[in-house]
Image (cartoon, rainbow, N blue to C red; front, top):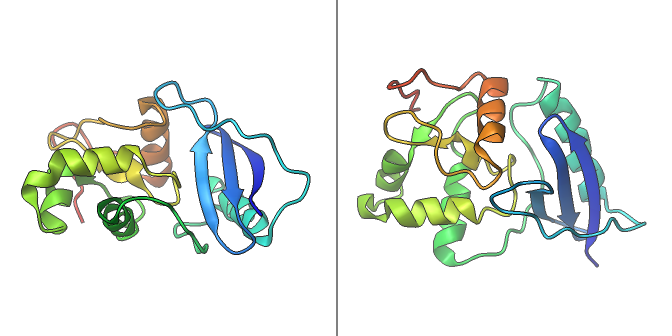
Length: 167
């Protein structure tokens, strides 16, 4: 069974979906660029969703830097590799799309990395907001750029223009 709950956060309503065992989606319900699936809340919930909301409470309170949740995002092998690598970007740090592409072994895959990031089904927890332009600009965020900026400021990882805080 798939359960869905809505979580009110400082960056808007998050739509959280999970099975009994794994988180499948965390999407911005109100994103202009990429609207979420707009699922209705289920009357029942799962332990995974309850734990996710507790961890979001701690994250937005500045008390949690690393999420620890079972996840099962659906995507191609390449997308899965990109999303897995997102988990290695430390809290408060950023990486450019170009450097990201180099680190996954294919510098020419920069656009494919951007596309995979844009299809990230578990926003914030798989921190695609930490991937920025080579010049330090905030580009390419399906949850709208103001959210990307808010999240990076919250984490203390917003670089000065022209300076990257690559890890």
